[in-house]
Amino acid sequence: MSDRPARKGPQTHRAQVVHKERLTPHMIRVVFGGEGLAAFATGECTDHYVKLVFPLPDVDYPEPFDIGEVRATMPRAAWPRTRTYTVAGWDPEARRLTIDFVHHGDEGLAGPWADAARPGDELYLLGPGGGYAPEPDADWHLLAGDEAALPAIAAALAALPAGARALAFIEVAGREEEQKLDYPEGPIEVVWLHREGRQVGEALVAAVTSAVFPPGEPQVFVHGEAHTVKALRRHLRHDRQLPRDRMKSVSGYWRRGSDEDGWQSSKAEWNQRIEAEQEAAAG
Image (cartoon, rainbow, N blue to C red):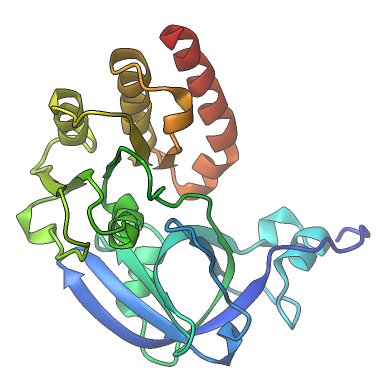
């Protein structure tokens, strides 16, 4: 055990499951509440995210739970695992936090947890974080991503002012995974792309690269699988010649062949390297 003083970690909240429903065959919505969310608050961002904390079995953690103390006083092998999820909705008056989970059977950690969750189950979460919101005076908005980015894309569309122009590309496994999205009246086009056995991101890259863009410069939000985001970042900067300052939020939420633990440990380096390479190519 380390003798280092405990570091102050991100704010910890204790959330309790109050409701669960299956939105599509592979998307589970869990609504959390409880007194443990009394200090939870979001700002103007539409891509707010939290880190869900999954304790390791047979490990005793200090109470009250504090991730900073855990990381400072316990060996790394004992640290709980965390998974990052976008906030699909937050109602401060009712104190209800909504998170949507992609579920593929026994695969992964958070999806199976959500499938088994029952009212009254508790989970610690850290955050929220976030940094993107659609600019009301943008010429238009380009939003693109897969299931992992769907909650953030939905929140961005809902936050658009009346009359805003947007083009959204959302890749899902098949037609049965489409969801009804709410957004204001205006020239907004939502294109659902069905993977249907193809590699993740293939349909998304093909659709964006072949699309006819509206006039003007878009504010860009592109998230999802890292290799897909890499290809779209290159296309938008190199082929479409979009200015760097319009690429407001472009990053991989996850990467094929890697769980979140592995991806998060290399994400910053990956993004910096890819951005540097593509900025050089864009001139």
